[in-house]
Amino acid sequence: MNYKMWWKESVVYQIYPRSFKDSNGDGIGDLRGIIQKIDYLKELGIDVIWLSPIYKSPNDDNGYDISDYQDIMEEFGSMADFDALLHEAHAKGIKILLDLVVNHTSDEHVWFAESRKSVDNPYRDYYIWKSGEDGKAPNNWGSSFGGPAWEYDAETGMYYLHLYSVKQPDLNWDNPKVRHGVYDMMRWWLDKGIDGFRMDVINLISKDEHFPDAAKGGHEYGDFYPIVANGPKIHNYLKEMNKEVLSKYDIMTVGEMPMVTVEHARKYTSEAENELNMVFHFEHMGVDTGEHGRWCDRKMYLPDLKAVMTKWQTGLYNEGWNSLYWNNHDQPRVVSRFGNDTAYREVSAKMLGTCLHFMQGTPYIYQGEELGMTNIKFEKLTDYKDIDTLNSYHQFVEVEGMPHDEMMRYIYKKSRDNARTPMQWDDSEHAGFTTGEPWIAVNPNHKTINASKQMEDPDSVFNYYKRLIELRKKYPVIVYGQYELLDPDNVDLYVYKRTYKEETLIIICSFKEQEVPYALDGYDLEDAEILISNYPVEDDNANIVLKPYEARVYYKHDQGHINK
Image 1 (cartoon, rainbow, N blue to C red):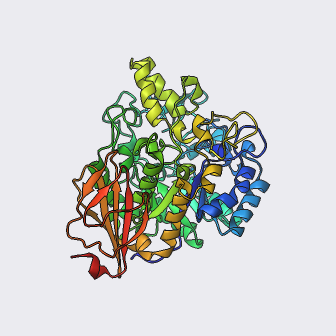
Image 2: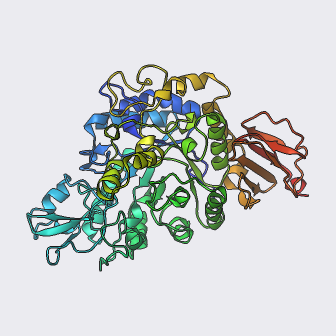
Image 3: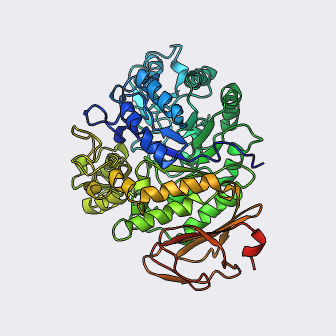
């Protein structure tokens, strides 16, 4: 195990195309805009671009509702634009990863348009249709976006399943025609030259054929997850996909998987199982959740975060592979969430990058993370565009009676739109994102937080991330080293060790706003090299005093020397 592979040694950069760069002034990011910024990404040093969905879509869920998998969303450009992007990226040594969204389609996809026409239509069994009883839905599942997960369709007098939006009907993966239709589409893109897929909620594709009621009932948000996730035939389907498609190409794959455990992930990502390369789990995204799920203002308790990260680091070592991420298009900005986005924004952004990038796994940078971009605070609810945010407000405020101000406080912290405000390129009116009116407002702090300013500043968050990526390519221990958590109960510091052959790293990251004295018992750091730090290191290693949100990485080549 632990074979060397290019995707293990890569750093991935996620682009949310709608918010990255607009080339034609319509206020919406597009493929030509991405082409304009390829040199920026090359300068940063990333290896792979993951594009959130670019396919034709009515945009009920910002492109995750696909009406044609082999066409491009008109707002983003044309297939010729995509081909040009693929060519430009490859010419710069950058690979392209597409989002594969095949748990569901749009209700405007031709398959569903046919499926709903009649019970004997050839496409009827492409989706999950059930009869209700006594005017009620087939079971009590609640959609992840609010309301029931079943929609009554008057045309045939039956219900179809939609785990997400009513415009996102779930595909029936038990139908081999569905599976092979998906595989044909995947091959079409891979033959075009793309370098792999990020697979949206891929572990939900195998449903329990009995469709049992959820324990909570009452159409609770996403109460189906414990029943649907990691279903009875999921490994059969992924092995078949690997055999039919993935194994034929030199590509990378990552599966987004709600409710996935380390034990599940070993099977999904083991090189012996022939399924996927890695998974996105959500355990560390749950360390600050509460009674209403993400909608709370609970603070993260550092030992909880360390326990989750360590469980995955040790649990997959030599048995699978980790993906490493702090944020994406579905999560708030990490510097606002786990760091300090005011007085210590820059140092805490650098600390968070250090803490993640020195773990074992493939790191994912979400657009703007490398600048330390922060959450947005819109004054009016109507300024938010995210379907999940708006539906949640309706549910908790208008249905359940939560005070408006309380819900808005939670939205400021957790709305998915925190990640979706336009990329901050410069200090001009719309941050250099567009010459028109942006589809969602730009964060006002772009005057001080922007790429143009940071690329010129050697001490910027951008240049710090660039250094993190450079180090990863230079030191095998960062990619392949074994992980060991040190001082697990420390509530202020995340301290861990990596070892590989004759190389040893000690990573110390402070999550505290005040200075923290620290004695690293049992390790001799004398003569150890500081590989990277977000402050000048002035102490003598024997008496370490960490400044607010300080991060430092010690390196020794002779493993026997660093341990007393």
